[in-house]
Amino acid sequence: MRGRTFEDDKSVLWVDHEKPGWDCTVGEPAGWKRAQEMRDDYKLFQDNGSFNDIDQGRTGDCYLLGGLASIAANRKTFFRQVFVAYDMEVGVFGLLFCKDSHFTYVIVDDILATASDGREPRYAASVDRSELWLCILEKAFFKHYTCVNVGDDEFDHPEKFFGKLQHALQSGELMTTGFQEPSKGKYANMGGGAEGQCGEKGLPFGLHGGHCYSLLRVVEANDTRLLCMRNPWAHGEWKGPWGDNSEEWNDEMREACGMTSKDDGVFWMAVEDFVQVSHKAAFTRTFGPSWQSVKSYNRFSNEPLRARAKKPYQAQDDAEISFQKGDMLEVLEVQGYWSKGKVEKTGEEGFYRTKDAEMKTASCYKYEFSLSDMADEAPVLLALMRENQKQCREWNKRKEDGKNYKNYKYSTGYWFIFNSAGKRVAKQRINARHVWQYLPTGDGPYTVYITCPAGAGKRFSVQGFAPHGSMRLKQLECSYSDFLDQCG
Image (cartoon, rainbow, N blue to C red; front, side, top):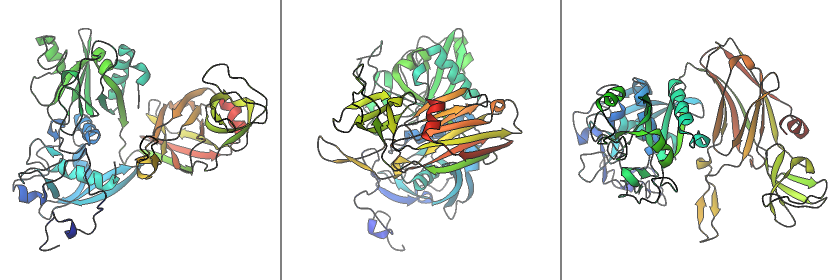
């Protein structure tokens, strides 16, 4: 490498010329320098790392930085623990990451992309530019991951949703959120402002769509329920009711919330306004290496699911399908009493009663999850984790233009959880990478059923987590008739 510049892609070991490292959400770097070449007073941390330190650069990774800000607001020494070893003079850093429930180390150097002046990092950096931890953590995250749900039904009930946020924060959950232009309500059709720094759509009152915000705190005072959020850009705030300069604030509410008015990306919003302009609140549960875990790995079946109609059926509404006795159906989803499928000879697609067709092939999975030596209030969590679709490099050809587009969608499945008395405690549709369920410690052992007809041979794992005690996860034999008897 001696005598070569980092700006020259021929000077590095390998460059993918079709994907040179930036796209429409990533600003092209002006150059590359070691941190000490940009300034000589760098320290890894000036303190422990605060949510106010985080300043997003020209990379569309607000989902990461929003999550980091949520961690910083609730875990004061977390980031020091992530950096397990480093040498500032040499410029080498070892960081600890948890991916797919496994802890692993990532080693990176301090060569950073620079902005046009050559004195500032191009991508994420601390607001205090003499701190280096955020630049290094972002770089290590992308090296490790290579490419980089909840409460939806309660958005119509602000009081109930606020209670869920309170409980989540008290339980140690970390939260992020995003905003969109509402189609109804008092903020609909108001137009938006300027684009964000990575091309994000401008929304009313200073917000941006396609962008991730940290949800830091919730406060209830004087019959008012407020949410505190932060923009990882370290500027750009909500300017509606309860914004920094809003007339709603009085001395009593400022004291109750610890509110200060400055352009630092931190802002407040009433929950009633939040549910109108937000489209989600994502909860994340953190686990340290001291937590107990148990895992079982498997693959969904790669065989196409087909069923034969036992008798003729006439659709009762537009969502159902009609078929004759003996017709073959391609099974798309199994939901218990109802299934979704396609009649092979007509191509008609919709729902039918599961019992009206005989399954010729089926993939059903059954597990027993047992607990011992647990405190009554221990936060026991059972999760289903699927293979990362972003790393599968699958493409779909779009009919409109014939071009290939990345396939990030997960095939639909279901899981059912029953306690020791046979009562169903959870039924959840699986159309994302992972789902999870908190379980009472005294109701086990639990029986878990999983089905994913279009799983296409993809890997999945069932995982249990608890702060102490012991757990056992055992896969059991399961026929399709067993699945229907219990879950149908």
